[in-house]
Length: 347
Image (tube, rainbow, N blue to C red; front, side, top):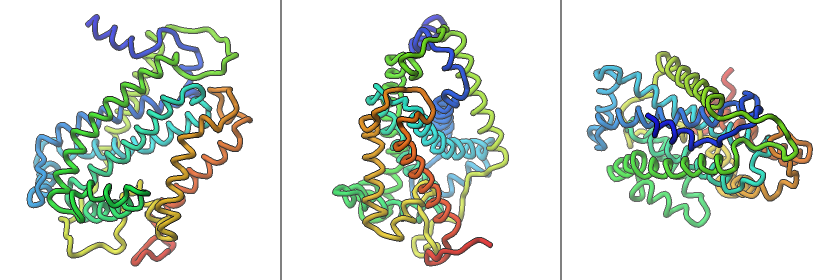
């Protein structure tokens, strides 16, 4: 027990600033992300015990899990909700760090965070096809076509994801292998590096001239983290009793839905591509990625840990516009596009 306690303390800096315990400083988003990841691991291992990666059996195994297996529906709902909450929480966490300038002097950890965000999307993508129902089949088909727009690597990357030129048995096996082995391995490495850098950097970023009383991490920070984790777990459990993970009819390659849409977290890119394949599928995503990667170098304000610092007004406005535009694209693509991708208000 003593070794476990020492290991847990080793993940945290010995002393923390009082502001670290204020909910407005971090919003608890890092712990929300970590809790969702742990829920995904626990529920994912359970689901894996009953899953079979074969075109003829995958859909039936999902039906077996949600209709016959005791607590199977609850476990699948938890897995689905944790995956989607993780996307929202990870983006919110990135925005929080950006708007507070907490990447100052921590470019390496900022880079780790960007890679982790990419893994969030990739993990959701590889898991989306596994039910092998009509919705996931055609969503992945659209998503893989969007991947083909990646500059230079697009066609090769699409072929790697699908295991060929189109969705097949190889796609299902490859998606499962990536989803349950390769990506969790990368997750473990990046999370370890991310937490190590936080400890190495002395915890939460703060202005250099801030002189406040410091408190020991144990028990104050541990209690705050436990509270945020339990709240997240309670929320996921509560939602899992009322929100079912979607499962449509069996995948039918001969009858595509109209319109066929990418997963909701990629439908914004699909919407942009509908206007211009080059701009929406290549130029804008690349520019957003480059902007986020080099933001710590573009920021000349060295005051970290302050919400919406005046010296970062331009950068904050740029990120705000990026986030709002992507939310708008997702809303339009997800709810305002009907047959043949025609724009139509729902009222």
